Image 1 (cartoon, rainbow, N blue to C red):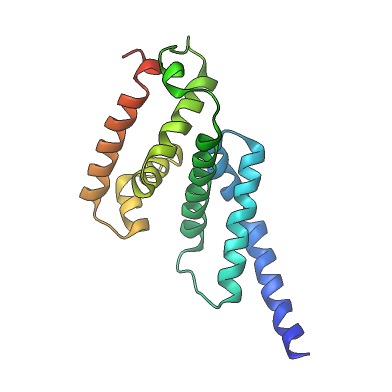
Image 2 (image 1 turned 180 degrees about the horizontal axis):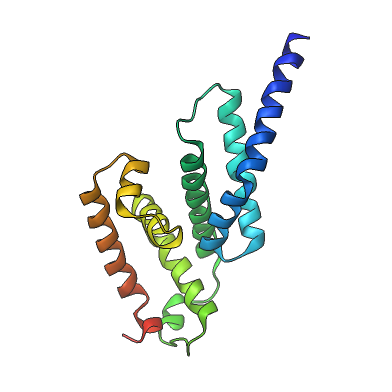
Length: 169
């Protein structure tokens, strides 16, 4: 009986968290993947991770920040998996710039983000896809604003180089 009594509060608390934050996680994932099915996969992954943390008794200081970052990282993992599954040679794609087609640019951005290391990709997503300022990102990640600014600058330069054919440069 004791195990069942303990499970009910955990389930109730988990359900409350899910309903409070599922929209945030889905929107964050969708901005990165551009695909509702992938965003739903990310949603499921993130909340399964949260459930595991809760059953192990791990506390989360800022739940909203944790979930947003977890969604970004899980979405980037999905994009990396998609990158590995690509059958088209990306060098051919780069020689055929898009004629103002946002879907192709979005896919190219997704592929370029998937090639970044985790921290730069996370910071770029927080800055440009989620709309947070450098000071906000610094507080979320526990790093200096200067480091955030440097990473944003370097990541933009790298992405500009990767997306050159799509940007007309």
